[in-house]
Length: 180
Image (cartoon, rainbow, N blue to C red; front, side, top):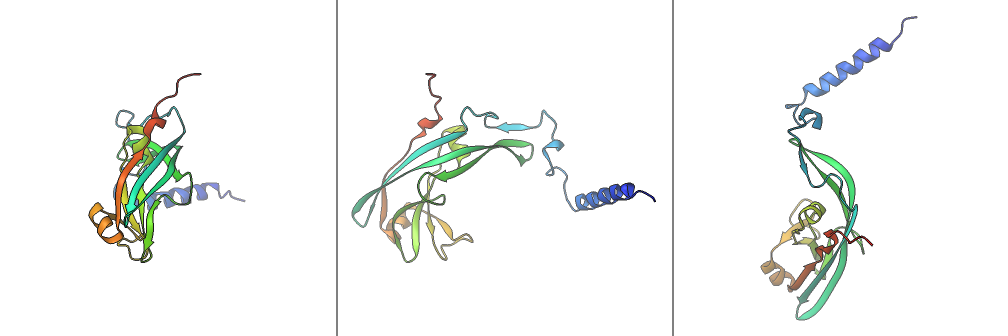
């Protein structure tokens, strides 16, 4: 009885070749297409800490009433990832310490829409010590496919009565702690 092993190997090779022929460029397939000298490492490949907590404090005024929202952005190291074009970077998961989702609600909702703070990207916070604070509107038909749209300070005040008085994110979690 003849073995089917050579036929199976040939079939797998043919399937792989056909699937690769559909690619317009082989450069984006794998980091193996880059030589060792071409790979650009973004961020420390072995971070000193694998978990960071960045406390956030937003003081705002909505329709004349002052309020404060506090939470912490939790960043957890999840390994390295290939970004394409010979770039490697750290992969971080992010979550808020209290509540669900990645947005921090600011003010009371109006007409089924909520103003929320978007803390940005853990990669930028951990590696560069910078944040990209932005405010978004969440709700039905907010303007984008995922039902969230960026909000500028003028329309935030005009449409939702919200004015940001003070915003702080504590980046001291990035500093190495002294040995005890």
